[in-house]
Image 1 (cartoon, helix red, strand yellow):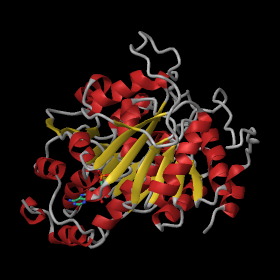
Image 2 (tube, rainbow, N blue to C red):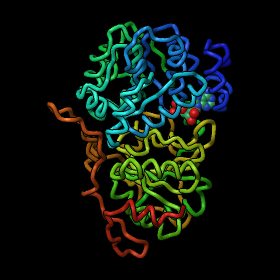
Image 3 (cartoon, rainbow, N blue to C red):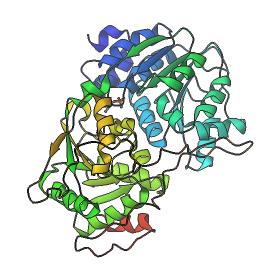
Image 4 (tube, protein in one colour):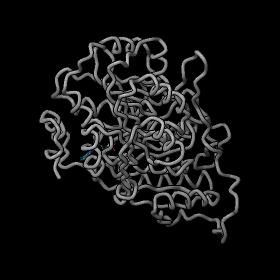
Length: 447
Ligand code: AMP
């Protein structure tokens, strides 16, 4: 089936064609007719499936009919968990609506200055893309008028709940008109996400796209057993030197690890940069832009910061530290193998990580192929049986955002790396810690 058969406006189709899309993805085929027909929808779909276009295209189609209301607020509200995803969704909304007159998208998220957002919110606009915390903040200051809102989209709802946004999401939904159309997209439709959808959606249609299985067929997933931190660093050097052909994202568990690793890589002559939540928004945007322009070869990132990063030339994802959850694993490796390209995901795992590796394999339905690099094999012997309880496993991700009475809601933060081991240089000398990372790094990193 082609985009032409989906009954979308020719001006939207023209923009879609310019994006280089030749045919709709599975989720687009399933979702667009239902959204155009006015149904509420809950969809289980991962990032990388084309889910953003699955809701933005029909939403834009609806906006072509002029609103009868004279109010100034948004007609479509898209809630997303992170500022990176907010920026990515906004970029897509702008691209898909480029041939539609009077179609303005406003993007608001925490960590950015208020005056620009206040100005944008005071002018007429149709689409609002927002993270829940900052949106509540603007709502409490009386800057948002939801009276003409027609559609509420919850993107990556599971992630929003993981981040502790359940209260803010419900508060926002309560402030919108009851007769709105509501769409919920989530990696899974279980537990709290399902309960939330039951509260917010009315007689919803449901679709399920097994994204990670389809998607990850284009990603070669490998497992490298590691002894310790020094072994990881030697393996990373080898992979970056011998294997990584285009751009690589290296994921670390903490911001401090990311900074320290970038220092080591810069010293080794790699075009490396960090991306994490301690950097201000300007630095993060600039880093992502340089990544897109191919000026950075190795991006060392944490989970929160890298969500939504959409760079088609990322050939390798390296899990220097394994993620905390299976969902994070899926999101991480989804940074490669994008838009039909092949990708390689390599995970470093210590013996204590085995239960997590098993969880990930169960979740994705795929095995990570154990590989060794000659001369860099692990020295430990594999143990025959898995321990009953893995005490070394990292603690569960803490809830990082709460609404407190009368106080603005904070954007999510990442874990501090206080308990993690200090990196060692290759000669075994302890690496001095550096905390004033960003400006220095910007100056060091090749442009
Ligand atoms: P998403 O799952 O929305 O993050 O989209 C993943 C990637 O697929 C993005 O780079 C989109 O630009 C791209 N994409 C979305 N729809 C299509 C399509 N129909 N054909 C090809 N690429 C697409």
